Length: 475
Ligand SMILES: [Zn+2]
Image (tube, rainbow, N blue to C red):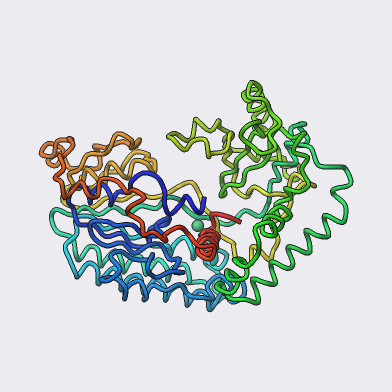
């Protein structure tokens, strides 16, 4: 996931606009480290291990990239000093606003994309303080939204009659779930997962797990983000795998007798994987039994009830092809679940439901919701319209059409007529523009676009893992 992320397959919106000869700017978009050549400027997501990979073209953008330096103590503060973390988080947001302002002043762009982490980051960490007038952090989420307002004002200032503005969030926010649903327990009860041996649930494994958890917690509290990264990069791969296995209870599963197991996803989603022969290293399910096992998983999990409350845990359950498509579908879990509010997937093996520890909720008390937002504004946009339900994949074709560019055949989203004014719809036919030779330079990103040394170092990989953890994408 980490290695594939920054060098993700396919093209971004700004690659497509760049191909058509449009000048582009992309700032702080997730999964854009290391950066690649674009027809304009790109400041990659905030990883900053190697300045050369943080901005393109570096000679013109070095000062911006340096000004965007990640704060070394960021994630430690998140856990140990929430008030200082709030200050530093706002400081980082201010820096990005400065970069946005300088970039907008410098040139005229056909496409600008800036990702504002602020609502996400602040809601994860300060949700519990919203409305609590006894706490000095009660306005922290609001302050982070004010940064977004400032960015919005900045963008509006630079709009002309040809510019369309889209404001999008790919998810909503709400209180963090207080309960883990340990799906491996349900799978075990259904006979789909077996533990290594019955005594595996008693010491010494439990003792080792507790030890590893305490060690991890105290390392995070004592050392800065960069020190932790350095420490991790020094550990040999088998040691890292050991820590992962212990913390996720992977070492306790008897893989030769296991048909299906939990696949961690971000709340409110969760996945289950079939332990398939020829795909998993210790696969136990024959190819011809794949569909039967998937049906068994659905039967075992769809009506799962919380024994403490009698309420349903699983809101939706799907085969992966009902949710995902495209050439990388094989990387998705075989079954995808959407959980009811208040639950997140867990790795426990004892009880179906366990409590999320207070120590975790102390610094991580807000979590994602499925509901995002989509606003469109500008002369080409139909005003006063309430749009129908849109999916995240609808954003790209609509944003491209606003720039007069047709969506590629690989884009699954729909052009929504209600977004645009009838004048724009009539005067802007949907067709593909032909490319000049110069424009074709940006046609596709290939291996040659990357500097020879651009494969991620172990330190960079750790930095990305930490960043994803900071965004809440991994536990
Ligand atoms: Zn998040």
